[in-house]
Image 1 (tube, one colour):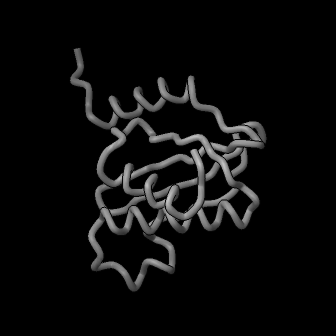
Image 2: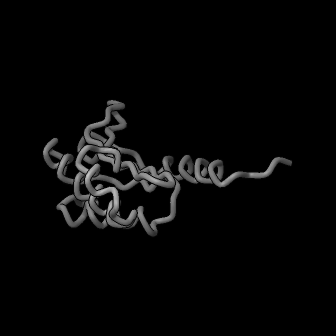
Image 3: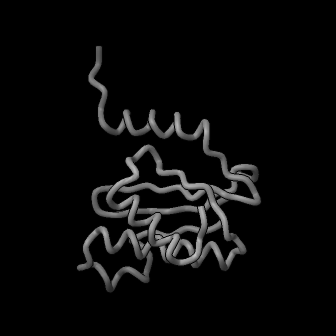
Length: 120
């Protein structure tokens, strides 16, 4: 039997989570992906299969803030994605943690988005 890698286990958790979490036009899905260095967030309408807003630590806004801690960067990405979603007319989302624990950078991103006015 092959060894289950952490990436495979996360992917399986994400698939299990996606059975319950679905983004609609009224309430799209806020999807989070984190790598070792960066964090990414997208607001997705699953009925149309379209990304409505996105933000990540690779955006031009974050180039000057490269020395900031990852937790602070995640919170700032949450605030940016909330602002961009509100510009697109979105006030409510469902949160898709992407198979990660609701802890650390994922929680910081969610808290930043809530602080900027996004509700989920």
